[in-house]
Image (tube, rainbow, N blue to C red; front, side, top):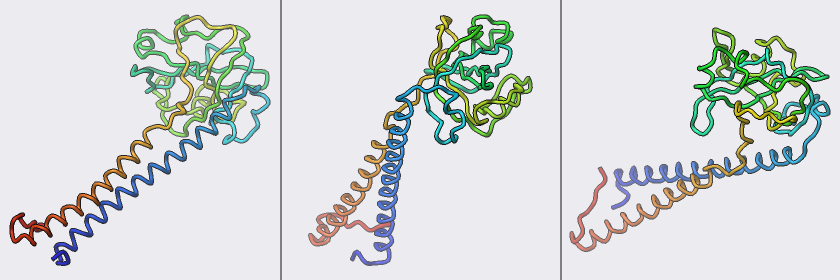
Length: 251
């Protein structure tokens, strides 16, 4: 009875559905493995602090998440905002400022500024609470890779996406780092006492949701197999009991 055209179509549908669940689960397992490998790589690069000038010529793919230290001066007249940023649910901007060193300029992400604060000022250059520390400072931070897309605002003071290349072109500087890289500030000496900008947190090195998602997909696959088997068994017993259990026929 389970080999009529309707039942064969039903069997095929269940097999395809279960296979899709298993494939989705395996994809999440693969994503988890990739994330764990990446976390190990990031931890290894975060473990030591090196002088920026000692690694500035290394390949780009070996520089991201390197923790570095460098001395120089912030140029408060050379900065740009990165829009569409958030921190703890609050919308705002990142403040990128040019940092002048003995071997060239670099773009430094000084941190997050609440949107209301930025919109409440005439401009960063006239708001002393948002200015970088003047004079010689030593900063420590993470080398990060930006994007190659995004747009510049009509006023020329905001970018829609963290794009170091476009930021450098807008500010008229020639970065010492590869154009796709910038430095994410973690700390400096002397210490800056002001509240804003707030330092951007380090990368999240957790597992993410991939393990739980994989478990869910495999659970769906198991429910599909076991549940369909129980349905077929019940229908068979109903037929054998001559109508004690209603006979189910697939639509």
